[in-house]
Length: 355
Image (cartoon, rainbow, N blue to C red; front, side):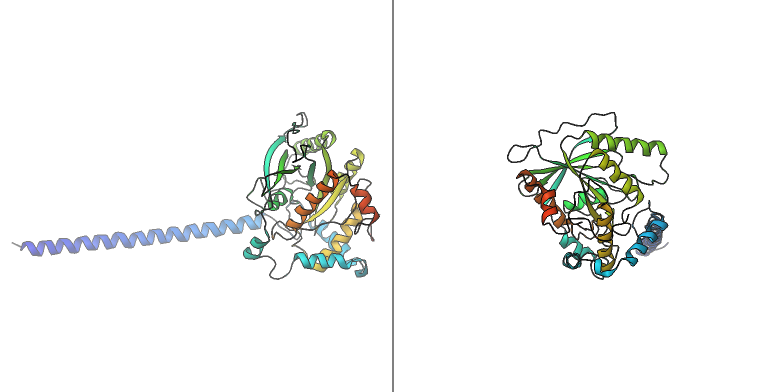
């Protein structure tokens, strides 16, 4: 017979061999799984980024022809029509596409938690009544003013709302997607001071307009009727802020919407978004042209055109400060239109307005 010690040694070697075999197979298995998951992950990222169709203008609802038309207008603008103050603002706020402006660290430093946004109401259909929000009051007990964000699909309305609360464009109170037509209802948010929690204004995030790929015409018509329903019946609405992409300019769809605001006698301002897509000089030229095109409309409230980038955070904190200042001046009885027309910077129609 075989000595017991030898049997125990053989059994121990066999056990070690089995464990090593399972360990090696596990390494191969998990290694393959990591490789496959990595390939799937990066493949999906490539697929999603490729499928998003992000052109120069940064939206899937833009045709290349529109981008080229605006680029040609920018190139044709005489440099002397660009105001020095606009170039200074771009440099001070680190706007425009330039090296080192967008990276996770610098963008995080630009984001400031100055306000909070809470969803307080919504309208799903033009047949629905508007919510009663009179209980949202300021420290004086007066109802807070209401403003609206409007613009073409994927102009950055919901992203800007989130960015003003100090968050990245994606996560936040307003739902965001790269797919045009993501916002399909009127969503009302209470914007409050971050430190005190005092309500400053109500902000309505409106559905986008313009071309919506793969969206039935019936749905687009329903959203347009919903937007008009809100704009016509919102009794506390003080102003509409029309968002214009910096590298796309005022399109025919934007002019059609501004025509509707003229008809409804709703004053509007203009904000340029995605200010990280153009070099500083081209961004300044785009600003001149946007202001000139908006000045063609009777309801345009005048003043300069603020620029910001929700992606990099540049100009967002300053925009929130300007919104607050406008609310405070209005509450104090100051006529902002008269102030801008009288001595406000860049208050009147801009040079180079297209006819």
